[in-house]
Image 1 (spheres, rainbow, N blue to C red):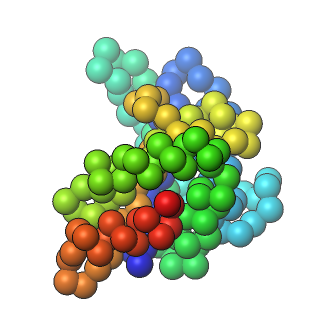
Image 2 (image 1 turned 120 degrees about the horizontal axis):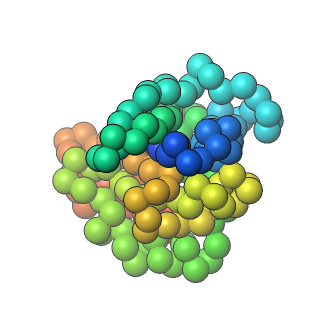
Length: 151
């Protein structure tokens, strides 16, 4: 079962924050089951941050906690990835699931701003962390849940 899904993206000072926001909204609209263009202010936390070299950036983050929204977002991600990305995700599943049962994915933020889901290995991406809940905590069972959701 999914406990929650965290989404996070950074808008660097050289980027148009509305485009980066649009990339995050692409995920949120599909999680909350609302049409494109729906205002998502209640779902997004905006934090001003400073980069390593003193440059200013904005971090946009959201946590999806409703079970129905989490499942809807997981299905959306799975259904809109290319077959190649699904295969890559499947092959990397054991490495993407950490000891805290967080399943890690990164998506290209430029592609998301254009309405496409593309896995990315870049640090400049939309970071998605899916918290898998098992009681008691069981990594093998969590892996099976991840396989059902994304494999």
